[in-house]
Structures are given as C-alpha cells and as structure tokens.
Amino acid sequence: MTLASLEHLAKTWHAALDAELEGARAFRRFIHANPEVSGDELATREHVAERLELPLIPVADTGGFARIGPDSGPSIALRAELDALPVTERTGVEWAADNGAMHACGHDVHMAALTAVLRAARTLDLPFGLVGLFQPREETYPSGAQDMCAAGTLERDDVRHVIGAHVHPSVARGAVSTGAGAVNAASSELRVTVRGQGGHGAYPHQGNDVAHAVAQLVVGLAEVVRRTTNPMQPALISVGSISVGEGAANVLPAEGSVAAMVRSMGDGDDARLEAAVRRYVEHTAESFGVTAEVTWSHGEPVLSNAPELVAMLDARLPSVGLEIAPTMRSLGADDFSFFGQQVPSVMCFVGVDSVSEHPAHSLHDPHFLPDEEAVDRVARTLVCGYLAAAERLAGMTDAE
Ligand SMILES: [Zn+2]
Image (cartoon, rainbow, N blue to C red; front, top):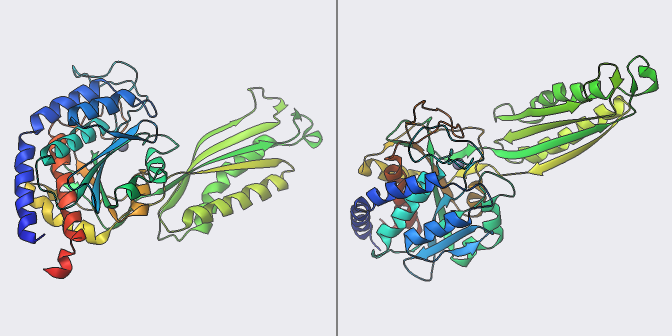
C-alpha cells in the first residue's frame, strides 16, 4: 500500500459516507428513542446488526463485533458503546425516550456514526481488516470493554490499534480533541465499614465512638492522597456517601460506612493509593478502638493515547473540516482504556452543542442532547482514525 492509495481510499470513503449520513441521523433518533441500560443491550445490538446488514458476533453477554475488509491478517478496530443510563430524559424532543432510560452520554450518536462508517466501507478495498466493536456496559461494572478484552476479542482478529470517538460538550462544535498521553484517569471505588461497641451517648467510656471514627476517615482521606502521589500528577478521592447511626441523638452507633471514588493519572498511583488508604484506615480505626473493613474495587486503568497515532490522526482532521482542539485531559474515566492497555490506541473527544430546550453542558445530564450533525463529525473522526492507524501499520512514516 502506498500513501497515494491511502489518500484515494480516504476520498472514496468520505464520499461514500456522504450518502450514509442522512440514514445515520435517523438511526440515531431511533436508538435515542429506544434506550437500554447497561447489561440489557440485547435489542440495541439487534438494531445495530440490522442496520449494518451484517451479523454481529456476540461477546461479553450483550456486546458484539463484526469484521469487514480482508478476512485475515492484522486489523484496526473502531469502538462504539451500546448502553444508556438510568436517567429520566428531559430534552423535550419528539424522539425523547420515555422508559426511564436515556442516551445521556451520546452513545446513540457513536452507534449511528460507527454503523455509517462500516456501511460506507463495505465496498471499499481496505488495506487491513476493519473491526466494529459494539461494547456493552460502559457505564457500569463489570466493564464491557474489560470483558471483551478478556474474551480475546482483539487477539481473534489480530487487532493492532483501536480508535474511539466520544462526543463532548466541553470541546467546541467542529473541533476534536485527541492529545498524546494520559487523557482520562484510572478509577477505583473504595468502601469502608467501621464497627465498634454501640451504647448510650452519655457513657462514651463504655462504648466506641464510631461516628467520630467515620468523620476522621472522611477528613483524612484527602490528606492521604496529598502524602502519597506526586503533586505534579493529579489524583483525588471524593467521598460520595457516609452513613452512621439511625437518627437518634443519644445513641452511640455500632456501625458506620464511607464510600468514595478514587481517580489518578500517574503510573502505579492507584496501587500506591490503595496501600496507603488501607494503612491509614486500619490504624485510624485502631486508634479509636474500632475495626474497619476496606473494599477496594479496581475500575478502569489510565486512558493513554498513543503519541504516534495522535499525530497522524490530527494531520487528517482538517481535510474533513474538523479543527484540532486543545487537548482535553480530565479525571473522567472511560473503559476504552482497557483496549488502550492492550494495543496502541486513541480516544478522540468530538465537540458538540447540546440543543435541547435547556441545553446541558455536562454528559449524563437529563437535558444533554448532542446536535444532529454530531453523527457526521464522529463518523468522519472514526474514518480519520482508521486511516491514521493504517498509515502507521503500513509503516509509512519509515518508508515514505
Ligand atoms: Zn460515554
């Protein structure tokens, strides 16, 4: 394959996509009106397969994938998510969902874009296999991407690179943020249960002060982060829930709990934080004469974009009318990082306007509604991603 043939492919692919976009926007509205939450995406998978006119090979319970182009040899994967959130929609559009679930994270847009990209590529002469990954359970644990990786999905088709594109209202409409290196955080969940001897509030010397121990843990967790990770690498623990006692003012409760979210960007920071938090909780509990049990659930690893792929992808975006946005790095988390952990990959954040009655500036908001042409821009970005990965796979940087 030469650079000239790749440029010819780019031209024909984008032209074929032009003919798919109207149908893709209609498909997006249909998917938006019929959302299914994480783990329930069976009908959604069926709709995608129908639209693709291709069977999807089932994986990770409710997920699926399909390969087009060359049947064997290395391939490049493009990823979309199937799941919606348990959110009651308030966008006010005619095609709003009314079943208590909502595509409030833009996954409807991603599915419509990826199906359009695959449909447009069916008759093209692709240099490498193109695998469409339709993953389930992005929004919950266990992660759908992790399960697909564990099932050997990438090995099966010799996937060398994975490209993802996620709509984002913090990026300007018409722009795309890629960026080399870590763009999303590693994520864990922490739960602590504290137990002691309950009793009468007037006789603290005959029991334990579980409420005070819980309060001390909440205050101290932020300090553990500060003492454990390099301050030049962001990390945080946000306490989301505490519970102790049953409402009585004069009872020393026997049990309490703390639940917190943990995010970090540095290599190995999640493991370092786990060890430090366990130590802190254990000894704090001991100093209060109570016991504490820590459950640490590991979520996604750091999402890191492969620098050489980012450069090639960015070079292609302006040719389809997309601007390169300043890199958006955040302590958000996306399980796309499991793919990136296995092969060099890129996640692109595609700028959108929210266009509901009360536009929302945050994903997962019941008013969040990406503009209809977001489907076009996500699709163009994915095509640029495949072409950049193909360029990389063919070793063109070395050869040209
Ligand atoms: Zn999402």
